Length: 293
Ligand code: UTP
Image (cartoon, protein in one colour):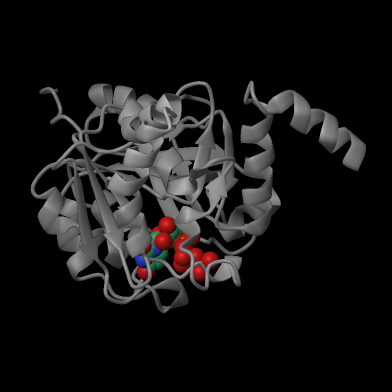
C-alpha cells in the first residue's frame, strides 16, 4: 500500500439545535457549556491538536457566533490579565488559541442533519482525507482517541470510525458497525446500520463520534436523501461509500470512557470525571461528593 495522505484538517459540526439540553441551549450553544473550566468544544479541539491536526474547520449556525469569538483574541481581557500580572491565566488562554489562518468557519444555514453539516465543509476541506469530531462526545482515555485513529490510519489508509461497546439491549439507539474481529483494536468493517431495530444489530459496537473520511464522502452527501428523523444522515452516506468497490472502512476500538455532553446525564458525569482527576479540584470534589451522597 502506498503511504496514505496525511490528515491535516479536522471538521467540527457545531450547528445543531441541542434540543436535548433545553432550556440551557436556548441562547448558549451546547458546545460552549463547560466541562470543569473549558467549553466542551475546547476539549475536543485539544484532542485534535494532540493528534497533530493543523487546520480546524467549524461548521456553525445561527446563534453560534460565540464559538467563533472563543477561538479569537480578546484583546481587552488579555491586556487586563497582563496589567494584573495574571501570567498563568494569560498563557493558558493564548496556548489554546489557533494561530492565524489555522481556523476556518462556515455556516450551515439550517440544521438539516449531521451529513448536511459535514457537506457544508467540502470547499474548505478540498480533495484530501480529513478527521471529523462530534464536539458533544468527549472521549476520555489514556491516549487521545483521534491520535489512536491516525496511527491506525497510517497502516490501513481509507476510512476509519471509532467504536466502543454498548449493552446489547441499547444498540437500537446508536449507529452500529459489524466487524471481522470485535475484540481487535482495529478491524475491517463488514456492515453499518443507523439505529437497528431491536435484535437485528450486527454487533454491540457503536459509532462514537470520531471519523477519518476520504473526500469521496462529499459527493455522496451532495445527493444524500433525508433519512432517520428527516435529517441528512452521515451514516447513510458512509454506507453507500462502504459499498463502493475498492473502498476500505476500519473500526478502531476506543477503550476509555465516552461522555455524551449533548445529554444532561452525560454532561453531569463528564464534569465529575474531569473534575476528579484535576490536582487542584479532585480531592475537594471527592470529599464533597462523599458528603453529598
Ligand atoms: P446531535 O444530533 O447530537 O446534535 O449532533 P443536535 O441535533 O444539536 O442535538 P439534539 O438531539 O437536538 O439535542 C451531533 C453534532 O452534530 C452537529 C451538532 O451541533 C452536534 O455537535 N449538528 C447536528 C450540526 O452541526 N448540524 C445539524 O444539522 C445537526
